[in-house]
Length: 221
Image 1 (cartoon, rainbow, N blue to C red):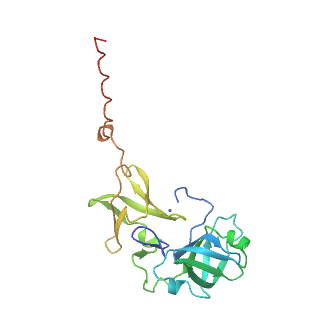
Image 2 (image 1 turned 90 degrees about the vertical axis):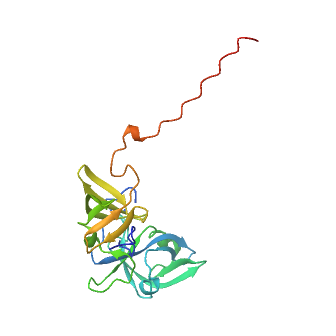
């Protein structure tokens, strides 16, 4: 699922360089966090939260699917949360069977996903499943510029693939670019920077200021 008007957060709601070895989650899952750094010596791991409801998502006994490269020893495995604590406002997770720092470090950069009932109302603000986004007409200044064909999830952010008349365009799913999503209308409104959806003509680029003329040499000494 994708979330956050431009970021997919419990967000199942991509990084700059896609990792072909990192399989994408199922449509029924929500992305709720990313493990960022080992904390202490007893297996604790700092978490970047991608959910507006950590008190419901990160409860003891919660089970997370892991998005990791196929080369990771954690590929295909799940994690069970023992406890979530906050140290200086930073969320830190303790997981079952992760009891030392060495084990914790093998989980760094793993993305956490949970199963979600498709029929249940979402408790996340601006949250969507991938299948709801794929097929949306992408609008810019009220004009259709393409169709959203794919959502990719990566540690730093999510990337949207938009099919246009001139080819595919990769759009970061961030609020600065994706202004709104209207599932009922079947549209996504974007406010991209100049050059993302079009070539910038030479005459649109400001000329460099001319170098000042060298002063004429004095005729007198």
